[in-house]
Image (cartoon, rainbow, N blue to C red; front, side):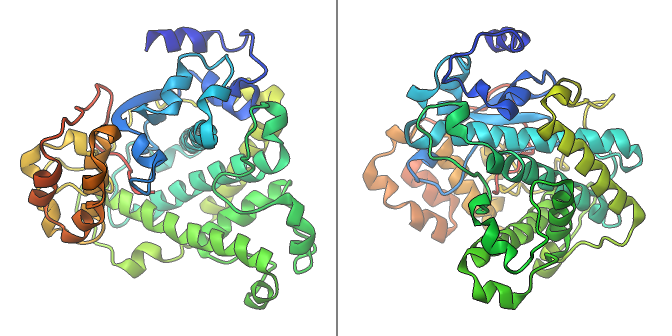
Length: 405
């Protein structure tokens, strides 16, 4: 998109409409970082908007320094003029959520580049993923998740009023967490030393994602405070989910088969090594500067690796549609999904739907979609929906894509 490149080249000097989302500092950082790409995908975001599928369909690949967005979406429409007012694109806060998730993915990618710079021995973009190295790479991925969550939700959104920065009538106050600064006095009844707007909090949450233990609180505290329970129950669930997704994604990319049971996917990560402790500290300091010191933002962009990332699943491995882009899989390989266990078939259905224009699927057919997921039958999906025109993959779409979220 050449017009987009021209816009981004001039981001520092552009005249912004008061209702432009680029008035939000972290949005402006992500948009202005030339190493971060916006890649359109051949899916219709209306499936997510209308809750026809329960997930966002853009997908994520943290090694590619890119945000994948639906070609039919509020985000795509916004890109035509990001310097203008965003109000007309933000019905039900759909646009601002997409843009904030873009920032979340940007911070993921930025964190990977910091790890690559400071810890080249990890070879996060190209090192062999094996049963022996998987836990090191899972740790790195969890650290990038902690960077994205702490940087955007805790250190930015909890500390800024989006409506003051960009007055478009938004109700958004947080993105992926249920923490609220207004409830800090309640949380401090049980943990008086709790500080969110300090570097120490990154160390606390990064450790929590790995171990499932949040220092300062115990189970009896959660029983005595519904507000505390709401916040930490979400984070406990989120930490388990992220450990499971990180290991599953990395096992998918491994050159050799890595078999993990449900318990092994969700198990806590060890923090007994000096390097891991030091990495937490280094990411903490870099992130604090990036979010809290706007003057340093220009010097904290993504540093791309000297060689392109080399993270691809073996071509002969049956596709797991939690981690594979359906648009890149020939139809003659779809049948293998029926024999696979787990959630692969469910994500196959979600992705198949995403390639269809939402408006082209009659309500009578949409009513049968839960049955398609239950039946686990590719032929049934094709019988019901196969006569509808599907969108083909766009040029920059990758094969390996984390759809599960």
